[in-house]
Image (cartoon, rainbow, N blue to C red; front, side, top):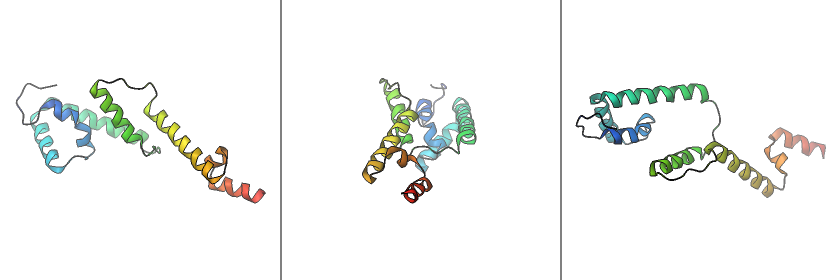
Amino acid sequence: MSCGEPHEKDCSEVLDHLYEYLDREMPAGECADFQVHLDECSPCLEKYGLEQAVKKLVKRCCGHDDVPSDLRSKVMGRIDLIRAGETVPEVSVLEQAKKEQAQREQAAASEEGTGPAEATGSTDARTETARAE
């Protein structure tokens, strides 16, 4: 995308890295360049405002859910695949992360010598089981 106006940073580059800017994950010098571009370019500023609003809405509606620790890297990996034009697996990133988390919990339970049902239970459930024995 380009607004047709000359800018130091191209519109497509700004939009490609918009979430890094929104999430404050880019170096300060690059942030300043992005801010200059947004000040000059109303189409990019409009896109920025829309993405910022979506981000706030998602945070308000979903900000309390626990997310698997490696989910962000998996999502970013999928985004990179899409940008590169590669095929994306049919399984959703969240479902894949949940499945891997369950596998890790089962592996940890096996190492402790407990069954999968006990491994997913709370500490209180394990305490009750130990008392019953």
